[in-house]
Amino acid sequence: MRIDFTKMHGLGNDFVVLDARSQPLPPIDAALATALADRHTGIGCDQLILLEPSDTGDFRMRIFNADGSEVEACGNATRAVGLLHGEPARIETLGGVISASPSEQGISVEMGKPRLDWEAIPLAYAMDTHTMPLAWEDLANPVAVNVGNPHVIFFVDDPYAVDMARLGPLIETDPLFPERVNVNVAAVTARDAITLRVWERGTGLTRACGTGACATAIGAIERGLVDRKVTVTLPGGPLAIEWREDGEIVMTGPATESFRGSFDPADYGLTAGSTG
Ligand SMILES: N[C@@H](CCC[C@H](N)C(=O)O)C(=O)O
Image 1 (cartoon, rainbow, N blue to C red):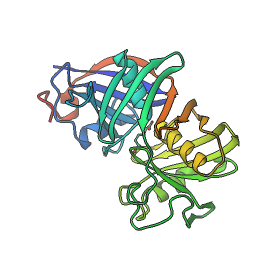
Image 2: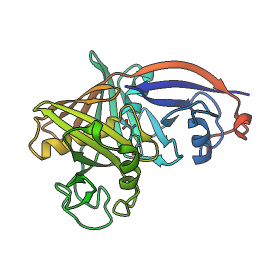
Image 3: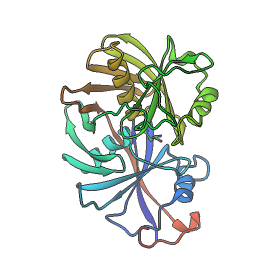
Image 4: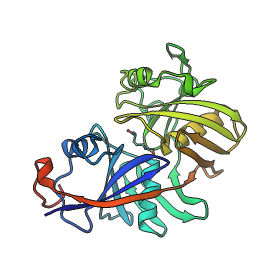
């Protein structure tokens, strides 16, 4: 017995997508997610995505980082599964029900409303999230935003001059963030343009992070640096982000199906069965 998967990406942030609605799957846990994500001994991806039936949406999307942690939100994967679905979809996630629909510009996702209070980020103790009175070496006074998942955003002159491989994990695992955090370094280049790099919680540096683009746009709008419609350019390319007057964040950008394949669960020490 083999398990079918679809390999997809959004601006180079890549996913292995397993669909439990069309085949029996073994229990998906941290160990399997880590094994499949491994770029040397597995299929290789930034996130493993599991699609399941849902009572509240058209389907449920579960998200596992490359380190096996299950998380609440993934903007790029939402566009990818929106592309797979092929028509407007309401998608249940741990972060809430969000919707994706094909548009002329790619896939548009209504990501929900951002949360800025310290308990919602979450932080370990009360703090002004708008301008946090903290620094990690040269990275100082970030803004914290939760867009389903937790983000901290530093505005810098040149995101590509920041040693993210060293500072990213340091900040991600700081005890200030009890659920760890995604680390964004951004430069505002115009009222409607931001350049961004992201060290993702549980995965590391990625080519793009959809929720990071949303959180960074919100942080920049909150600080009065940009207007409510902004293009956020990541190493993998641009995303259009709008913070609508009704509070909803809308992210629009491309999604790509790379290939379909199958694997033998025995290669990962598993036998196929019902999803756990
Ligand atoms: N790549 C994603 C975010 C994936 C989850 C993130 N690493 C977390 O732990 O919250 C995106 O496109 O948003």
